[in-house]
Image (tube, rainbow over all chains, first blue to last red; front, side, top):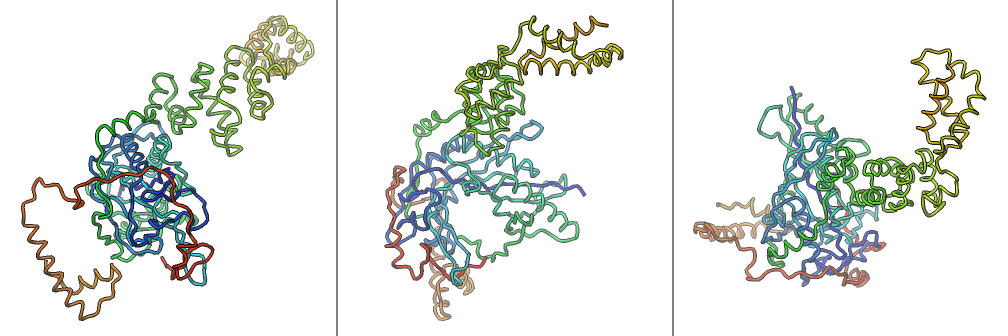
Length: 484
Length: 95
């Protein structure tokens, strides 16, 4: 039987506010345990939450970026459950009237095609603390620094049909929140966490199969692996005559499998009710318009502009627009050199390669956009050839010189385009290579094209790489053919 | 809705309240009366009426995103039964 996979994602994005969603405690990462947990975060008697305006603004910005309806009135609810890292006994969340309503996100697949994934809603909530299960004399240690950190939970519709689409969706969300600057998007530090809902159904069937929710899927790669495992597990189960149980499963990246968390049924009875400590949040049109005006150009718009106005390929436009830092670097290089394709090639090729080798982000690139743009200009105006350009790049990368021009002068890399000088070098090479010349003369005409490579190499060597390769090629062919 | 003792037990367990057998049957009666009143409210036509999220006719004030709290860990941990390395210690939680 042919099976179809149905996937929906719940993405928790940690908002990049300075203070917590309901208190003035710091949200900085990596502090000593419990030094950033104040009376409100601890749920001590008599405290009252006060909502952080920045958390609201960030949620709205996200909503506007995904073309969503923003709720004029949104309400906070209490989600009740007992766990030691949740000192109040409830998580303040938005169950019935979330701040961000239905919207959509465009994802780009590997073949360059796009697909629209609908967003069901996104709501504001607070994070819980952390339980440390290492052995403290048979007890569990609790760090509440993270308690009260603002989260935006983004819930998709079940619109994805395979693991690649799910990963592309997660990347699109990552790209949007980092463009907006509402989250650092650091998955390793937990700033973006993802739960995946997966089910399978026979191809052509309309009704959804029973789904399993996979928790703890915290990298783009894990999303694909967790889904691959889970789909196979469910299909095998059904084909063996069993049925999928609706449950929460945990992804174990070390074993590459999902395991049932065997939570008690009653643990899912959260008894939501409106939080009496918080009043409804009311947003007016002027406020939304103000935030809309401040939105930066978003990845999808940039991608389209790079493709339509700058003539980049769908692939290049997608890769470069995925990160705001890379897109802005590319645009600075482009405005310096004026050639979008060359700028894209250098940013994605030489620069990205060097950054990856040294595990640097583009924001920390040792070579600036201005320097790279200038270097490309020198290739475009024939001051240097491609080989010399790589040498200049390396020198600038290593800090040997302030500008491309300075490196070109210091290293004597200026391209030789003087025909007389190139001819003199060619004559010398021909005179020094009687055996190869004889071979060239005696071979079939169609094989000569390949053999010319030897002579080009020798001339380039004689010029220490500075001769213009096209000129060398043309002149060599003339001179060798004259000997036939 | 007819309330049974099992409902009371379940609600008590979710709220982590210890309820004796005597109390449980008493709560069945009390809570049933509350639910009857809710049923009465449900019978009203509320078509077109916005659900009330809060009894106060006011909207949420927002605070500026500023860190205003300082580290008061030592003070807070004075009333905790067990702490170590800055962590609150609780009976082991098994997943």
